[in-house]
Amino acid sequence: MTTVAAPAWTRRRTLALVERNFMVYRRSITPLLNALVEPILYLLSIGVGVGLLVGTVPGVDVPYAVYVAPAILATTAMNTAFNQTSFGVFTRMKIEKTYDAILPTPLSVTDIAVGEVTSAMINALLTSIGFLTLMAVGGLVTSAWVLLALPASVLISYAFAAAGLAVTTYLRDFPDFQYIQLFMLPMFLFATTFYPLSVYPEAVQPLIRALPLYHSIELVREPALGHLSWDLLIPAFYLIAFGSIAMYVAVRRMTWAMLR
Image 1 (cartoon, rainbow, N blue to C red):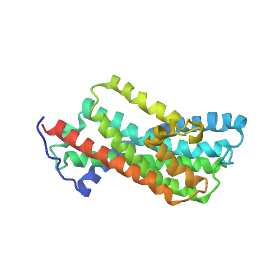
Image 2 (tube, rainbow, N blue to C red; image 1 turned 135 degrees about the vertical axis):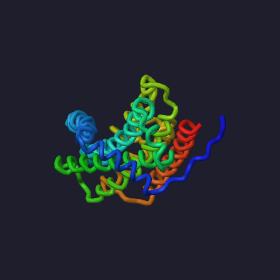
Image 3 (cartoon, rainbow, N blue to C red; image 1 turned 60 degrees about the horizontal axis):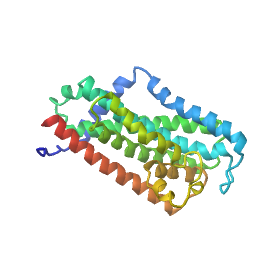
């Protein structure tokens, strides 16, 4: 395979793609509303419904719904960002051929990649604000530090938007998206979304700690419950590193695929 250098990006050109995306999105708020439907259903069915049976979470001493809500907020940011840079980008790349029309303009492949990730981060932040508002209305906020969930959602969306972009460069057709769910769904279920890490055997706990969603949940849940410590730097740096590596892979592969 011939190595193709990734062209540099500029903020002005990147913002042009972001503007293009939001000119499309402004026609309907349906995508943002759809991104909130699933987490709301999880919160009501498991957080509130199962919470009536669970009561308070042992070792944390908060109602189950209060414990689960920040984790669902983290997964909301994850899913919003990841879906936009996976399914959305794949459609624009393979079906609509949007990027073929963009490349003859001054925008580079790197501008496209950074612009798509930036657009996904903005959408994820908007859905996070919407879900956090619902948490507050539902009485599931116990600490003012929950506001740190918003900058946390930006980090989460950066990591997973970049990951979605990188993964998309390996997909051949729409059926390949099923392979993504083989990883995403178990991670959602087992990355301490619905129960503490302590319920796992000690041999399994390192595997859970290695999951990017586990660090995402920690970065949101701990401040939401009023727990602040320097340990929160660990998930923050993890997500920055994870996203940066994924972004590097995505740009290199997109550059090779589009400019070869």
